[in-house]
Image (tube, rainbow over the protein chains, first blue to last red):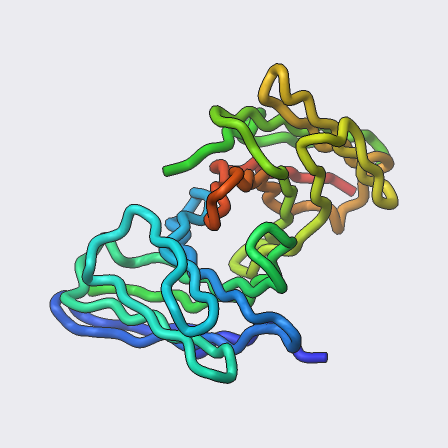
Length: 112
Length: 111
């Protein structure tokens, strides 16, 4: 049973570019959440998707957007990249919003 | 914004000793969860405790929750070198869909 998979594992971009990160949830999970984790910090909630809709959003600017597909997989898009966007981006899936979350190993995004 | 605050920020112990980490939070919760993260990897769920529960056990893990003090503790007994990792508490509020993580406790278990 495959867990949460994320791609790519590493990515290097320059300021002003755009990036798309991808996530496939654990089998049987329909809820996908995205987190940003800066070095030495805890994960910060970006948004959560359920039934292809953004169900809740954290304190992130509109440059951060997402999508969930009918097969429950999800994308995170970040436009106009800033140096401060350098972080580990984690995807987590669950069966419901207050259930334990299963995390992928993340995408390490570096902005030059 | 972060909800949980872990204490201590870092903890170093010898193999076989017990490790205790604490978490404080600010608002009423539905449940509180503890996760472990090995360096550069994703988080692994350890245990979930609901607001109407006071204590839960899972193997060598013991979690307590005191809603009156808005605090929780994670005890790892008979620690092993493989327990070396960062440990995070995360809270889930009522009528809310996000989970709020603290900054974590970095545990080092020396062989």
